[in-house]
Amino acid sequence: MKKSEGKIKVAVPFIIFCLVVISSMFLIKYDLESAGESYLYLYNYRTYLPQEKIGINVNTYQIKKAAFSLYRVKDIQKLIEIDTDNNDINTAVSKLDYKYMEKIKTWEEKFKADQWDYRDIKIDGLDGGFYVLEADYGKKVVIPVIVTSLAILTKQDNEKLIVYIVGRKTGKPINNAEVSIKDYSGKNKEIIKGKT
Image (cartoon, rainbow, N blue to C red; front, side, top):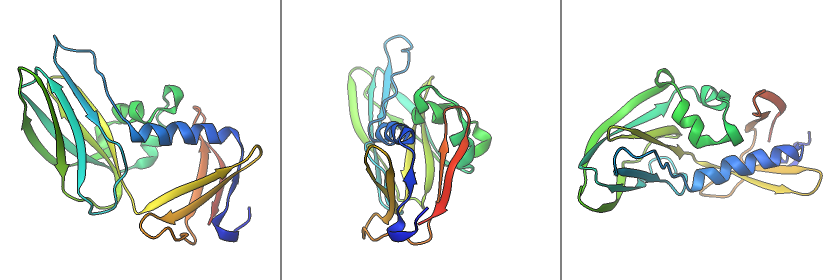
């Protein structure tokens, strides 16, 4: 592996996994089986910088109230190890055991029960980490919330993938960032490990 400019070469099959996981983070919608005709959807379109105000879109129908809980994932490796169809981060979050999460905030939201209610729920800025927002209205709906000062930029051709780790605000390369790329198709086998 070459250290020059933080480039890392990776096998082409891993590219598909990266694209599935990254794209699933931008539009996350849980459409649960309805209890009667009530619905609750959570949307999160992005990742957030540390201490940036977070906005999660909530859409409800025929729900008077829901209890919300925000958890910080204590062991991200446990989340990564969850075997899901299509390496779906949404399914993995919904399967994560509570013992690997720390509850950091709870509150209740009231909604207009006789119609669709659309709103943004604001959460004060958080430290960097992986979080799970849970809404409970008799059924539970969860959504990941990622807070990081880093960004991953990739470039690929037919034979390789080049990965850059940069600061999200500055765009400057992050030196000596530890990078571990694994095959999560049920094997959790490390393909390559190195530093930028």
